Length: 115
Length: 113
Image 1 (cartoon, rainbow over the protein chains, first blue to last red):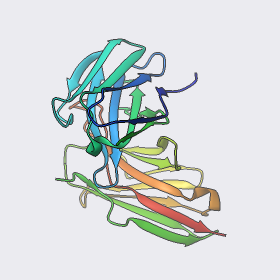
Image 2: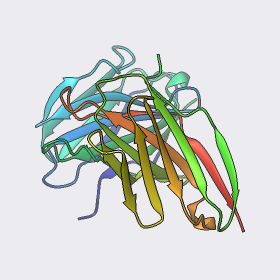
Image 3: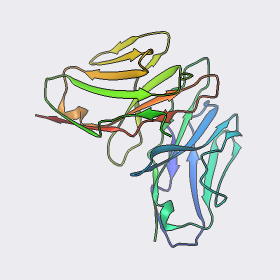
Image 4: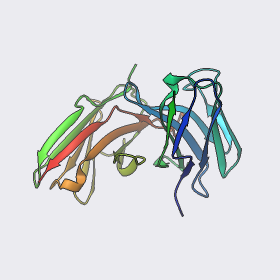
């Protein structure tokens, strides 16, 4: 398996523009996570899907952020409108929820810069 | 409110010696703990884990120790190698509340040749 695939790797956009980040989880995994990494807050969980259903979105910063998982092999994280403070590295991760094993596999991340 | 804390932002160790990375947590419901390693411009990669029913788990040069009463875990790397230089993240989860991971702030390990 190619692992978790994220696109794009880098995104530079102007303030106010819409940004869409994409993720393909590992085939067969039933849980998907979006994390954001910043210097100030480290790795913080934004939203978590289980079997394509959003379970916990309490980490989503505000209404400008939305995430979807239309099927088991694809998820998007959208920011509209984007702001400079959204600049960060966004990671997608997936795992197979079985028993108590919760090892998650991460993609390489999308570095977002909002100018 | 940080539920998982890594109080040392950085650690420098000589090649061949032991590296000890520490992590503290506050949520007593956490029952599964993991360590991830992260190189620049890459995603975190899983290293080793431990269930709350154990107090030690070993995998080659890597050993994780868990002290539930102190809500503390540590990662030992013996012997340390220059290729181990990376940022190490501690993570924890409450299996009864979903399998999302709560991460510490990370510790940058530098292993000097």
